[in-house]
Structure formats: structure tokens, C-alpha cells
Image (cartoon, rainbow, N blue to C red; front, side, top):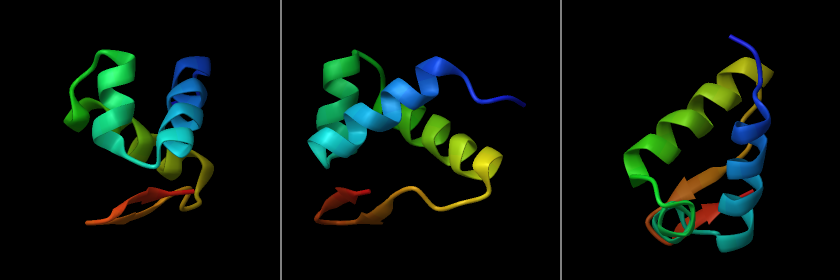
Length: 59
């Protein structure tokens, strides 16, 4: 798998919103789809890009 520009854009939007739910609404995708793509991106770059909690998502 390679890193796609779309995945980087989605990561930036998620970081700005600090909420996967709000970012997914902005992107007009399901939250589960966004979360899965971000996890795939983290696996691809072999680094944790976000800290996920009940309070939101932080870069």
C-alpha cells in the first residue's frame, strides 16, 4: 500500500477538527471509513499520528 494524497488531506482535516465525527461530516464520509483510512495511514508510515480518546482525536 502507498500513501495517497486523499489520506493526507483527510488526516489534516481530522487534526483541524480534533473530532473524527466532525471531520467525517465535513468530508461527507462515514466515521468508520475515516477512522479505518487513518489507521491504514498510520500503519503505512509506521507511526501513531493521532491520540484517540472519548474526548476527541488529537494529532
